[in-house]
Image (cartoon, rainbow, N blue to C red; front, side):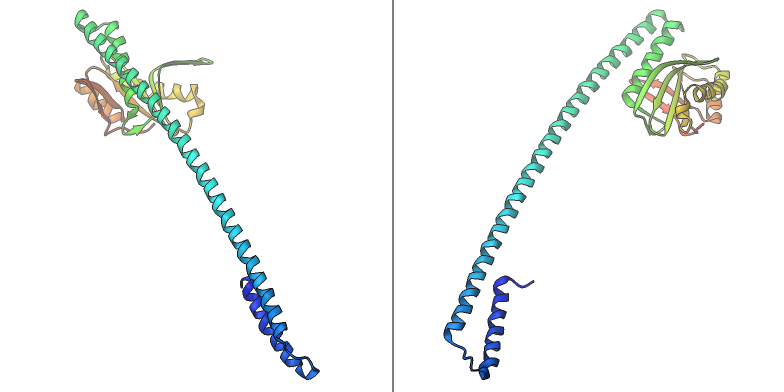
Length: 250
């Protein structure tokens, strides 16, 4: 689109042409006529430039305002992110401290009783709960949260699950045994899985992965767990060792 003053220049030319064509009608082009047209054109150009400058100023003002608002939103986001990082760091430190305390307590009690007992089973369970709550990963799958000691009853069906890990598509059921018996593997893959699906129908479409956490495994249990696709977890120094290459979904 042509600026207003350029349109006016075209108007000058057209007017001059019209006046020239009408000379035969005894109309003569005078300098006053051209001067009037030029004056009108200059005025229109002046108005156009003033409007253009105003538009530029308004645009620049709007741009600065939007930029300031965006910067403010970014600062608020950074502030919230920093606060979230601080809370997460405090939580991780607290959980790490609790884990260290439980681990030390478990080792101390294990030495005192010097064998297998209910106390050993209790502290073994606490050890694995704290380790998985800290790690939130099983069989290479990241979980959103860990729920220990889930007990539920629905009609005639009731069951207890030592550790259950959840995310949007998967469930991990980890049972803790100080010493694993071979027949419990079958119970885990049948009764435990069936009861969980009955008691928690909201997770009917989730894949279920199974794990056994223990202080040690004998060869028969290891072979049976691999055949049934059950993961195995055990302490290894200060870390948690997971054998899950053979795991499958139920």
